[in-house]
Image: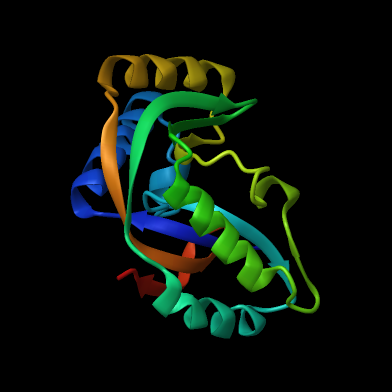
Length: 174
């Protein structure tokens, strides 16, 4: 599986990393930190036979991808074991989702996850993953006490491989 993801400005990264590390420290669940998962927002999840079919397509998007601002405003859970913060789905994110989908949807021998298609997508920034029920409760308490809405700027788009996270390509947005 390959992910096409949005990466944030340094100030937003620090805020998100702070939540990730507090959750890891207080729950003992080190999945995010041990796997070096950077703060990111997954735009698309693609099954492909190899990265070789995706790299040129993602690289070609470089001149079409723009920086954009998003508002991270809420906390949520994907049961049974993911804690995330979520942005308002604005025109910038919707356009980004459509641009990426249009670029990858017709690549031979690939498939885009039905959960990451335009208008079927729940944008989210994971701050805890593979949490037990007890760890979810601790994580909820942490975000309840330490999260306030904030603005982030998307400054890069990347292609990565999962488990463990490995960047294959990062493009700076203009």
